[in-house]
Amino acid sequence: MKKSISILFLILFTTIYAQHENVPLDNDVYLFLKEMKVKGLISGIHDDSPNMSRFEVKKLLGTIRENQSVLSNTEQGLLKKFSDEFCDEEADSSNTAQFFGDETGFSNSFSDLVSGKNRYMYAYREPEASFYLNVLGRFSFGQTFEPSKNNSTLYDIGFRFRGTVFNHLGYSLSLQKGGVSGSQTYAVLFEPRLKYNFKFIEAIENIGNYDFAEGYLRYYVEPAKDMRLALQLGREKLKFGYGYGSKFVISGDHTLMDFFRLNFDYGVFSFTSLTASTVGTFNVNRDLNYTKYLAINRFKLNFPKLIEFGIGENIIYSGRGIDLAYLNPMIFYKFVEMSLQDRDNGSVWLDFQTHFLKNIEISGTFFLDENILSHLQEMNLFSNKTAYQMGVYWYSPFSISDLSLVAEYTKIRPYVYTHTNEKNSYTTYGELIGHNIGPNSDEILLSAAYNINDWIRLKCNYQYIRSGENIYDSENRLVFNAGGDAFVPYRMDIDPEYIDFLDGERVNQNIFTASIKAEPMRKFYLNVTYKLISQNNISRNTDSKTSYVLFTTNFEL
Image (cartoon, rainbow, N blue to C red; front, side, top):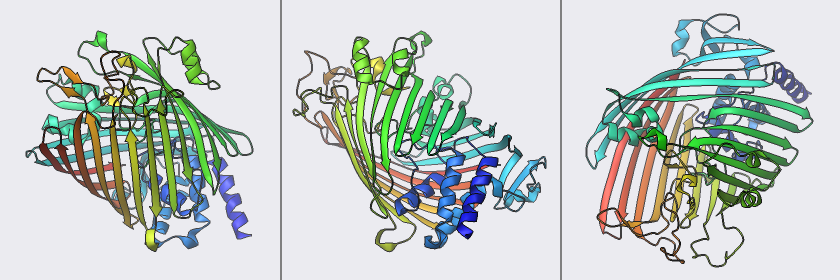
């Protein structure tokens, strides 16, 4: 009886305070939900397309709350923290503060600046409309030790406002503006997003500066039982595909893309269609800059407590506006691409993720770039641009609560992500859209994370990466094309028809990363990261090392 009342209460207030704006991918709630999913308490976190709305997160937290008896003390603390943040119907002066206005019943004492409460500069909520405003701030200091001692300081400030209107339309807008002092070169090492930030790259002002902007509208409706439809237009960080490290389809390690996305779920069936626009490599001559497009269709079957598997395809094209053929969600892109005279870059992938082993999850992806039917038995043929990834996620290993272990292997053959038209390479702003190790490479990833309590998390990563790079002479002329550069395609009648994996200039990397993240006050974070990159160029018999420590503090008010 008590459980039925709890479920009824959740359904009632989910309807009254429906929040259909998405949760940013850097929110720690995704880590918690992933651990609870592997533990077997929830399903449906769809981490092949991980952006979730507050509405979805709240429902998942509700399911976890029904199983609190099996949670560790740290897990219960995390559940309480995230419930206070996402269960809007339970937000009041005891757990939430706002510094301007008093319509919501939240606390408005400035002493809450240093409390454990969720904080907003301004908040407004009614059943038909809501509005939440936060001020965002960040300060980072990075110090390199090898190959030389250099440091950079980054600081930015901005805001985010979000909400839902008409119980179905979520919205969000955020903007951050920042500056860089110290080494401009090493700032990119500490903040990789600067590699594809126009203001920073342009570098025409007296101080290095940058900006990040996101915004979107998202419409969500449930037209029938177990049926969910979401439409989204705008810009935010995206990831797509499985993978515990980087991902084959959309890694998120690149500039933000503008997109239109359709998500449809009905029972065990899921479908996603996405069309995104982005840009090519930066060029000082703006007449040489161009727009390119990415289109994705994906079908998935999800059998709870058993397995989910899917098939997806994507197309990258440029040199024209949006092609209506690739806006069609009910079509096979590869055959359409042929009918459009074979100008574009197409890929297909198959993937799966298991649910039947408690505390253990296995996932895998097989990625085929363009040539999907012929000569697959000749794996060293240049046109067999294939890749695969297998990984396992183990939560609470050996009955150690709050610990997660990850092991993953990734192999990407030569010429994957390339295209005969360089503008159609699988890249944006000069960075890979897909897995960050690039073509003609493989990676072993080992990772461990431990929640000391509900506000301190430790994490260690080890990566062993092997790659075969293209060979150039002293005048930077291409001598041997190993298929190791996404911007350099196979050259007919010049490059060898058969090429071995890891051929070319052989480079091995050992990368060790250790970090500690603390949240001593709600939405006030302290993060310290140490990273060591040891690189061995076997072909040239040279070694190099890069090491640094990065201290970051950021907050939301």
